[in-house]
Image 1 (cartoon, rainbow, N blue to C red):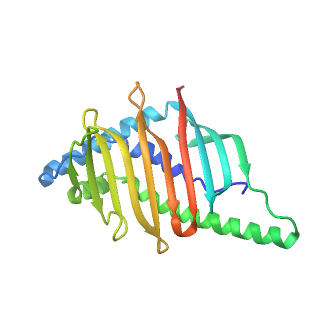
Image 2: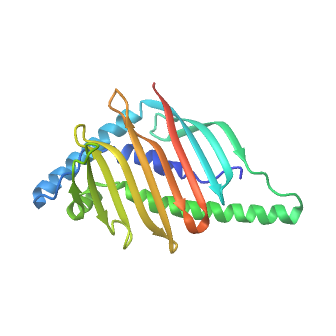
Length: 231
C-alpha cells in the first residue's frame, strides 16, 4: 500500500487538543461553563507550543496481522499552521502480479482509503474540538480519583454516537493528560482507540503512543511520536 489516509492526523489533533486542563467533578452550570473556557484556553496554549516543535512520527497499518504500510515521517508546522510531513521511510506490501490481480488489489486499496477517511472523521469528533463540545462532555461525564497512580478519571458515554464511551485520565498534580480511551461504533462495527501522553520539561503535553483497533476488520494502526525538537 503506497499511501493510506493519514489517520495519524487524528492523533496529532489529539496530542494538541486533549492536552487539556484537569476536568473536575460535576459543578453547577456556571462553574462547568467556566471550566470549559479554562480547558479551551489550556488547549490553545499547548497547541501554540506544539507549533514550535518538529518530531518523528512512526505509523504502522496492519490487517490480519500483516503490515500494509510502515511509515516514518518528520513532522513540523508550516508558517500558515498546516502540518508538513517529510517521508523518511515507507515500507508497504507489494501488489500481486498479473494485470487483473493488480487491479483488484488497487480497488481494495481505494476501498480501504475510503473506509479510513470516514473512520478518521469519526475519531476527530472525540477530540472535543470546541468549547461547546467540552462543556457538553463535562456536564454529563463523571470524575473520580485520584487513583493509585495519581490520576483523575473522567468518563462519559454517548459522547458522539449512542452507546460510545470516552475516558480521559489526567495527572491530578499537573493537570495534564495521561491517557485517553475511546470505544465507539463505525459502520456498525466496534472500534477501540487508546492513546498515552507524555509531557516534556518545556510543558508540552503530546500523544506518545496510540492504537486504533477494528476487530471485525482485523485492522490495526499503531502510531508513535518521538524525538521532539523545539525549532
